[in-house]
Length: 482
Image (cartoon, rainbow, N blue to C red; front, side, top):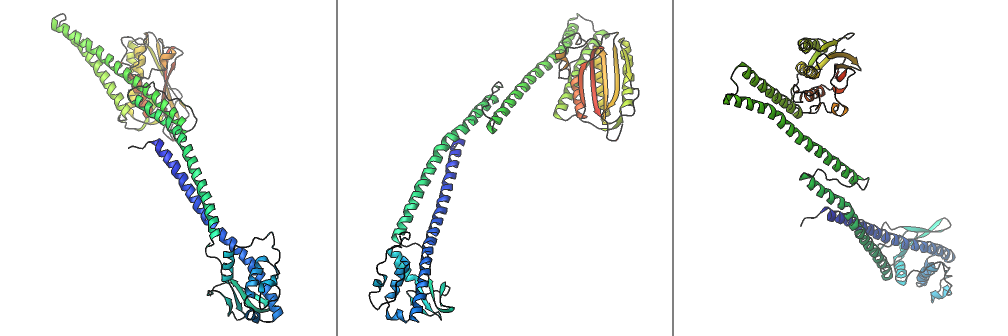
């Protein structure tokens, strides 16, 4: 049987409570036993102090310890008198207890039980000045503590008491048993309360986890609209927010993937359809196989080749496998060389193209020359294709905050605000006059974006003052150069 998180959490809380209660019970039991022994021994030490005063006083009166030999029963009367904290009077040969004259007990002093009283008499001992036993009911250990008995400054003997080692009195044991039973009952109540509270707590904690597991299963089946309700600000609430963010991202990615597949299919279908139509026309004899027909087929084949090449480069860029061979290059001469190849094409389309590199110094970049040529070639191709004849195109280069900023802007037609934000999306083409039949597949700017990102730069599109768009590229200047 598989144990769930709810059961594990419940068992963990109950086990922790049981261990805590057992530890507390053992500590209390140990403390109670030691405390009770200390209490009993402290009472007996008080009696021993009283007995010391009594023996010193009687010894001073009698002059020796011979009175203990003449009246052996007087020793027990002294012990009994020490419990009541009274003076037993002079010893007598017989009926020693009459010397106590039945005094009234101190109401603030609790007498020891008879069994404990007998234990005290058996454990107290009296030594003479040379530490020879005078009265001892048992063998005296060598390290037994004793109090000196003095007459003036002269030591006349020693009085000692062997402490309790364990509680042995029946009533004391019964008292301790009742206390331990009460502790056990309290411990049981604590465990039951912990179990009663842990069950709803574990249920409350695992309920959102079960809901998250169900939502995750639905997400795995493709239901990207599923969302988790956020009902708290703790870790579970943060987990729900993260799940919702994941579902949103996966939904967007799935939509982008479907759009990507649809766009690729559309872009490949167009040149393939044209090729098929022209070939079938040649097969049916509708068109003659002449240089014009061959050139048309070649044009469509080249268009298809460029599309496949662009898709391949984008896939390499997405996988991080697009190779870059970076070195220090001067940006201005490189731009000058590429502009020389495009000036004629702009002139053919009757577009006034100018480049402004005035007041610029050397821009040394750590970059891949081939990729930068591809970057600016795509930008110039884009401006060449989408600028109306008779229009203008201007390329400028400046320096700002250790970045080389290259700006290419052209004249009408332009794009609206919604389209300009998506110009760098793959296979996105503006459905206006700026996307005529001469337009490409919508991959050029997406490739430009990948190349700029690989060089730790940025590229943005914005409206141009001339009516078209402005593409701004920022590339970091090599450290210590520029």
